[in-house]
Amino acid sequence: MAKASKKSATKTKSTTPTQQRLWLMYPPKLIKQPFIWEVGHKFKVITNIRQASVTDEIGIVCLELAGPRDEVKAAIKWLEKNKVNVEPVEISAIEG
Image 1 (cartoon, rainbow, N blue to C red):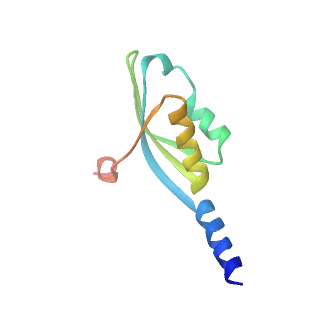
Image 2: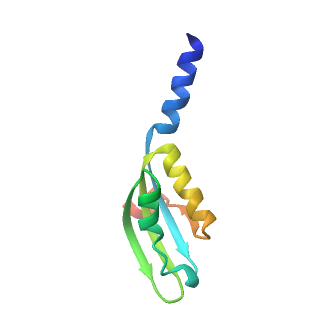
């Protein structure tokens, strides 16, 4: 019975809802790619753009991802694999 409880706890942990705010930084050659749209369709996450600044030289987006913990982590890995620089947001920077 203890084994079943441990397995359930592990499963719950990866599917526990989470929310993360991230800074996405795109180099010029990636600015026109629809990464945020793709993340919302490839993974079971909700995307919320909190701030954005896009020029011909750089794209900077503050993105909030919400969903199951494992899906949020997978979405972040996918963005990084596609050469998007991903950094966590300090909460006080957005709320303050």
